[in-house]
Image (cartoon, rainbow, N blue to C red; front, side, top):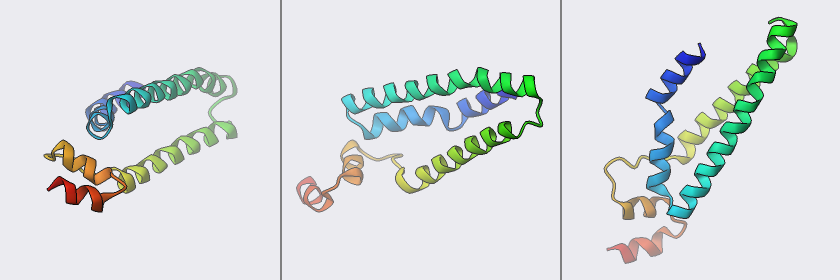
Length: 114
């Protein structure tokens, strides 16, 4: 199941993170976001052995294991909400258009862009 999850992730939303970061961020911000992404990956990967050990030692009927999966599902749901609220479509747009979409002073930049 883990291999299936990785395959599906890599062919769907996995690469989108890297493409989206390169489109909407400057170089320094992309470096920081990449470092944060890998730090979170290390943290999550470091917890997996403890979760597997707790499942195999105490059985799958352990109530605490269920809470772990509920927490993972909740984080996934929060990520989905974040995508729908904050991420904007950038397909076919120029760099200036993307910068304007994410700028805080759209009126000022819109007048100078023309």
